[in-house]
Amino acid sequence: MSTILQEIEAQISGVKTTVAKQNVGTVREIGDGVAKIEGLTDVMLNEMIDFGNGVTGLALNLEETEVGAIILGDYTGVKEGQEVKTTGKLLQVPVGKGLLGRVVNALGQPVDGKGPVKSDVTYPVEKIAPGIIKRKSVSQPVQTGIMPIDAMIPIGRGQRELIIGDRSTGKTTIGVDAMINQARINRAADAAGDKDYRRLYSIYVAVGQKQSNIARVVSVLEEAGAMPYTIVVTASASDSATNQYLAPFAGAAMGEWFMDNGMDALIIYDDLSKHATAYRQVSLVLKRPSGREAYPGDVFYLHSRLLERSARTNEKYGNGSLTALPIIETQLGDVSAYIPTNVISITDGQIYLETDLFYQGVRPAISVGLSVSRVGSAAQIKAMKQVAGRVKLELAQFRELAAFAQFGSDLDAKTQAQIERGKRIVEIFKQPQYNPIPVEVQVAVLWAAQNSHFDDVPVDKIKDAQTKLTDYLTNRKADLMGKIAKEKALNDGLIAELKAAVTEFKQTYK
Amino acid sequence: MKISKQARRDAKELFRSCLVNGALDANRVRQVVQLVTTQKPRGYIAILSHFERLVKLEEARRTAKVESAAPLAPDLQASVRNDLARVYGPGLNVSFSQNPSLIGGMRIRVGSDVYDGSIQARLTALQESF
Image (cartoon, each protein chain N blue to C red):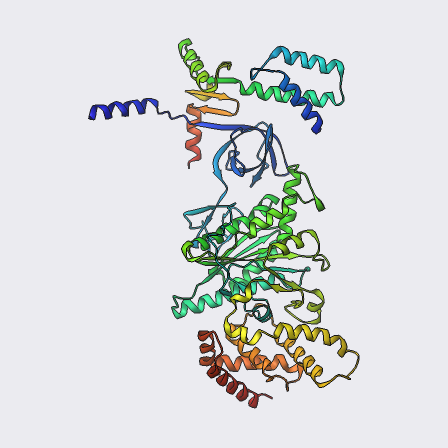
């Protein structure tokens, strides 16, 4: 028997060759970070191509006689006539918890000078989104800590909620606030040793932003102690269009790792208008046919396949989630432009920020009429549903009546009361930046407003009264706040306690 | 030079007419070039340059370049020829050349396939692994 084995082994070693077949091509044309390569007959779509000297490319166009590839990294060293070879691998980025607290580029390489990233797992940048079988409907809340959002436009884990508005209306701030609030809740859960709380990790993807803006966001996150729970992926305005195009996909891959491993993650794409512009540039230099506004035909698919990767998976597939907050910048409030309408139709709702409101001092400048959340209300905690159920309607009625109120005081008592209530709610919803409010405090303040406890406070004093009430509740009635946070609903006992607390506060408030 | 879609299509059509049993026929190629240069149809320069490219790629696909550091013995050449014919089918033009920079071993290129068994390639791979 052993002789047969030896014979087989001898046969195998005779056939075995050390020379492997490689597939090569020649660079025919190079420019704008795009190379045209002749040959490469076996190349796959989206395969990495080795240009030598550590430079890699990505095959994006497979044509009859040539291959169009985008070059990742420094393309100035690539020359015409140079030989390139296929690698048989798709573009991958490192993923995992080792990336938390780090600032990385679109390829997952660190750019914060804190040494190499500790990660032994990689994920492909492009991945097909989880299918129907793997999914589950959204039912857990993402507490952003921003009162108007948590009350009226709630966001659930696994949802895609668009943040849309003109330049400098506070879009990034909403994202940063949400990340800071997650870090605050995670820290509290860590301190309490709470094993049941599902920690929400954040990923901030900066596309085409100024380096100074990115540095500012990172320093805000560091100051708020949010970096240990956050990954920052950057492709700044000075990075190549290729990297700007890839950065959101790299961020999504990092988020998917959390989702696949039964954890929750929140990803903020800041912003997708610049991403579309970068993709347009890549497509045009690849000579793909252009469509409306010179965007390529697949710009819709570009964003839909990216955002479709956010999901909530069911228990059988890990019970994780990836929540996406894409940001879109509009020009002069035009939501009907090409990219904004595309992304609005892809997402499960939008938060619309208005310049006018911003300059009126209503910050965050959320337009209640145009903002909507299509799935999030299923994820609101019961206590919030109890107090915030009517707020959106009341505010809408207030906006309608406020127009009348300007003409005079001949209003009946009911209308007058509605206007006064509306003014107070608008005041209560004003909130300074980087200052998220815990959900139990939101519930208590909204309960007080809904039950006419603020009606006798003048409108210009509302903010002061709210701050003092918050202080009073968090310092003196911490156990009541703890109970609301734990019960997640207002029962008769809690309502009585809350009433007593607010009445007591009102007696001391001047 | 910008080559229009029509020119590409025409060049492809001409190229197909030059194939006999899947292999390029040199006489037909000459005839086609002769005909196009005399008749001068619309965009003939573009058609000819794309045609040339297609012929060049087809030539490369049917040509095996065998490079070795030292000249190969005739029987080794014959065995290389046979092995290549077994993989790529008959009708392959095999050309042998010497390239001392390979240091040792052999490098064969057929179209965009490369079998590199040279010492130099191994040294490069070793260098890149660090």
